[in-house]
Each structure stands twice: as C-alpha cells, then as structure tokens.
Image (spheres, helix red, strand yellow):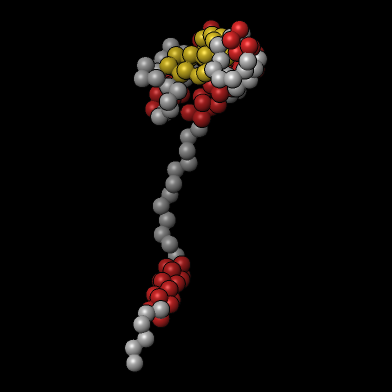
Length: 137
C-alpha cells in the first residue's frame, strides 16, 4: 500500500514493478544482476480520485505516456531494494505534486510612490547617459 496522503492510498496490485538490468558502469555486477526497477502505473485504471487522475493527465511530464501510463525507471542504487524504494518514492512525489493546487494570483496596482520612484530612477539614468556624450563648445 503506497500512501499518498491521509485519505488516499494506492494498493500494491495497481503498481507494476519489474527488475531489469541497469545501464552504465558497474563491472560484473551490472551484467549478472537485475538491479534496476521499471515501474508502470496506469492512471485510468487506478483507484485515485477523479481530480487527481485529471491533473496527472494534464501534466507535461515525459514519464507520463499518451495513454495515461506513468513509467519510472530507477537505477540510481546498486541494490534492487533501494531502487524499488526510490521508484515508489518518485511515483508518490509525482502524484502528490498533482494534488497541490497552486495559489491564485490576485492582480495588484503599483503604488503611486513606487511609480514615482521608478520614473525618477529612469530620469536620473537618462541624464547620466546624456552626460557621456560629446561635449559641444
């Protein structure tokens, strides 16, 4: 059971985990042992709430396919167990990020004094640049 929040949890049956051989350097170990983990999670067939599913589908993340399947490859560590934990933690973080609604921005006007300061600064800068020009006699 993967806990997302106090109310939301994903059953282990909905998460596919496969051990595969890791890429890169590692000597004989990398050729013999399948330490990397390939995680697949189907958003549409999951027991997540509908708003989570919709937000996950709208994310522009390369780990989410067009069919709504999250694919995570974990091969950071040398042990299979640590890679499994890493893959599940990354899935958990991705789903949690979809649950956060960004705070709406309220448009504000600059104060009169801040506008005045900005204009005065621009005028001073313009005068400084004008003084750099050729001196006429």
